[in-house]
Structure formats: structure tokens, C-alpha cells
Picture 1 (tube, one colour):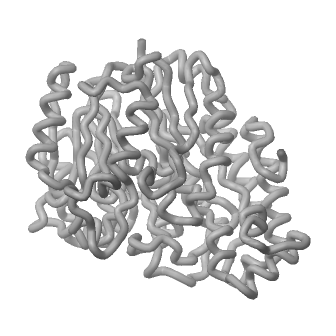
Picture 2 (cartoon, helix red, strand yellow):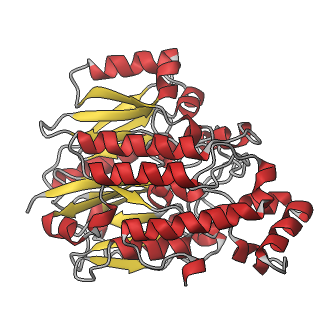
Length: 447
């Protein structure tokens, strides 16, 4: 049966703002308090989705979340009408208000971990929503994420959904940002690659000293068990702690994989030679030929990789078997990174085309092309079972751009987050969006 890798990109939400909430994410903290443009951010994301759809790739849309999250503010002691809750939070705890207003669900690489049916024991596609326990503003996402995913992938014959792992540091789970998969073909059994930052229960594993390690080994192991994966097709690897301390908060900031190819930095993993050998051996047993493309520190430093988001890219397979790498404009603006990409595309290797997108609104908050998408490998029958209204088309692209133009602001500052009109604007917009995408009632104000 024919299979595809579909990308489901997060639609940027109406409260997209720069609050600098993500400690350990250099771009997020360095752009704190800039004035954002939610309308432009959403349009930039939609333009990338449509461009990849036009190239023949399977492309879908993941809806944003309801923000500000007034219910979360009520749970921590603010009371009265919604307007009073926002006023109190803005006066007494503006950082908390910013956290409850974040549009961070746009980075759907953190929405869940996904295992295709070719790998799972029950031959269904499995989804485990990420608890994102390391950051408060993201830890409140998984209930809505789960409802949205269940509305998109609803057919229980093909799809299985798991609750987020226990919301505790020992099971910190950041979703697909620390997970990739290698295979000869998307419809064949593959090797699932789980990357973690620390082991919560075993002190023998080293830890970073400056920035937090967000993904635990225990969380990765739990997801592999929930999805019914064969241990012979799973590899666990630890991020290099010193690289986390340079701002590599997720594996997708330092490595990206597709089919038989891993594109990664020289300093991505602890005990890197052993990790690459294990990936190669396990993929070979499945008939695949693993190929690692390692970027030397001498050509692109870790700092340059973090600043440009070279590795927070998408690797996409064309029909001829060659690959496209999708990068943000920041890669082109960095002379050494751009020079490397030109050499890479002309080297005769599997990656022979570079596509550049303007994603500045997302990039300034620390999310590039890879952050914006959740990869889901689907065979023909599974793709036919996906909610068709979330799949990109010319009509949906036009409809969503019109929706954005009617509902989004083109300027949003920290002070605007306490505006009671913002809550109502967002709810009106999202209520209409659920009808456009055929999601039903997925938001708290609809339940």
C-alpha cells in the first residue's frame, strides 16, 4: 500500500506575542517585549503550507488554542468576570498573564509524538500528546491538543490516542521535537529515534549545567511502550549536555531526519559514534541503508546553528527520491551557513535543493520550519480517514487567509494582553475556525 509523510502545520494564533517565556531558547528570550504582528505571523505560516502543498506534498493544518486561557488564571486565584480576571492578572502578575496568553501551540512539533502503523503492534497510527511539563505556558496545552488531534484523526480503526504522560518532571515530554523516524519507505517498518536530555531516575547520566534538559529518558521509554513499538526498531540517544547549554533546547535544533538520512551537527549527541552505528545497524536489519550527514563544527558552529536554525529545517522527499531542505531566511542571512547549504546541495548527496521561507515572526520567538509542523506517516487508507477539511487546498488557503484578515490584529504588545476585547475576539475567531475545519467543539468556551 502506498504511504506518505504528511505535515500538519500549526496555524499561528491571534495572541502571538513576544513575552520571552522559554528559558533555554535563545531566540525567545533575546526578543522579549518586541511588538508582534499576529496577522503577518499567520500569513507567513500559511504561505509555507500552501507552497509545500503546491509542490505535491501532503499538507494539513492544526488549529491554534484559545488564549488568553482565562480558566488557567482562575485556577491560580483570580476571580470575577473574564474582564476582571484579566485586569487583576495584568496588574498583579503580568508574567503569568503573558504565559496564559502565549500562542506557543503554533509549534506543533511539540504537540505529540506519532508512530505510524507500520511500527506499532496493533497496526494503528498512535498519538501521545506531549505534557510539555518544563514550561508552564506550554504545560496547559495538552488537553486542547488532545481534543484537536482526536477531531482530526477520529477513526478508531486507524488511529489510537493516548493521554499525556504524568505532569511531573520525571516524565517531561516535548513530543516530536525530540523524535524522528528512519525507514526505507514511509509504509514500511522503521527505526524510531528518541532523543532525551536527561535521565530522571539514574544519576549516572550527565546533565547540562546552564539550561534545563526538557525531555527525559523515562518519558521517551514510556511513549515507546504506549505505542507498542518493537525494541528492535527503537533507539534512545542522549543530547550532548554542553550543546543544550548553548541553546539547543530540543533535538530538532541540532538534527533532522527523513527516511534513511540523518542531517546533524558534529556535537549533537552524547557518544555520537555509537548512536550512529546503532541507527545504521537497526535500519540495515529492515533492509534500509542509513546515511548520516554530519556538519563539522569547523564549518558551522553550534552557536551559528542555533542563531540560523539550520537544523530546525524540514527534509522532504521528492518523487525522484532526492530531498529538499526547507530552511528559514535566517540561514540565507548567515554567510557561513548559506555557504555550507550551497555546498551541500551541489555535493551529489541526497539533499540537492534548498527552499527558503520568511518565517521571521515565528523565528523571533524561537520556532523555525520544523517547529511549525507535526509529521504523520499515513498509508492510503489512513489518509482517507483523516478529517478532509484540515487538509490544505486552494480553497482552504483562501478561506484561512480571509479568516485571518478579518479576525487578527496586526500589532500586539504585552500591555494588550489585558484587553478584555482580545478574549472575545479570539473566541469569535476560533468558533468560526472550528466550523471551517470541521472540528466540532474542541475549545473550553465551547464545551
